[in-house]
Amino acid sequence: MSGATSAPFGRSTLTATPKSLYRGEAFGTPSPGGSRKLTSRPSSSSIAWKPWLRKLSARARPVAVRASYSPAVDTTRVQQAYTSVADLYISLFGTTRQVDPDDLAFISRHLTGRPGPVLDLGCGPGHLTDYLRSLGVDATGLDLVPEFVAHARATHPGVDYRLGSMDHLDAADHSVGGILAWYSLIHLPPQELDGVLDEFRRVLAPAGRLVLGVFDADTLGPFDHKVVTAYRWPLDEFAERLGRAGFREVERLRRPGAETHRPHAAMAAIVT
Image 1: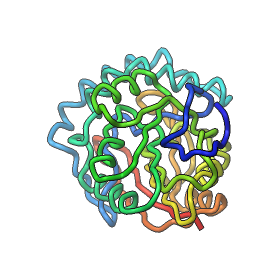
Image 2: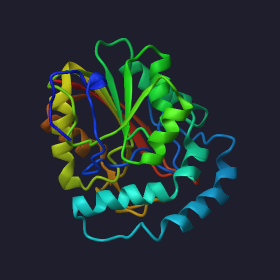
Image 3: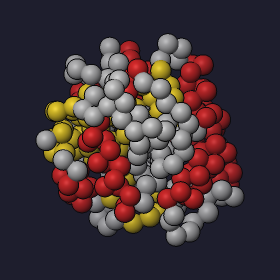
Image 4: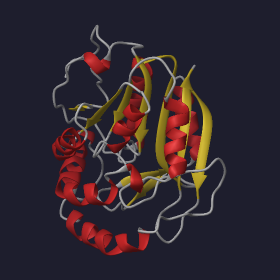
């Protein structure tokens, strides 16, 4: 993949480049919502998901090898892990009906009514890209997993979905109005985060918005995600990383852990 181009991202050409695009949402975890610390509100189908999640865990184990991180090797592992459960993932989490309304409101609040295209990085089945498009946003979805991109294109015709690299976006400097990274950074080793945030900052226009989802914790560290190793972040530490890259946090939503999910959070930041 080439670096910056003279065209905005939504009109440029991307090729499939798996290096350092880290897969999307928190598989098996309802997303954060609400404007304060909330009591867990799992959907009515949460209990029904449990047998599926046990199947998922069993299916993911052969590719979800835990080892010391080498970004090039582990990006391939993440891609293979999500490819191995793509159909199941799509069936469980592939529509906005399976997204908490508070999360949809959070995304809408920060990424609509602003100039410029929006990139949905780690878009998975493409439902949030389509949601943004339904609100009048010029949104483009990218993902590392070809099965997700193929599904998104078939399910949401007329929406632009592409294979692409998160750390080398094929977009001109300051050409993007917003980025949605909804649990797209969870598999990223902490030492690689600053470089990816720098790339986000490069393509975002002045006052551009970044919206992301993360797992919340008191201490930074890895855990056994249902698909492949992921990381929990103290939110203040993550906000500090955002500040280093030239962002200012503007809103934070948190949801405590419960039987069906781990503590997690959403954050919104603006380019400074």
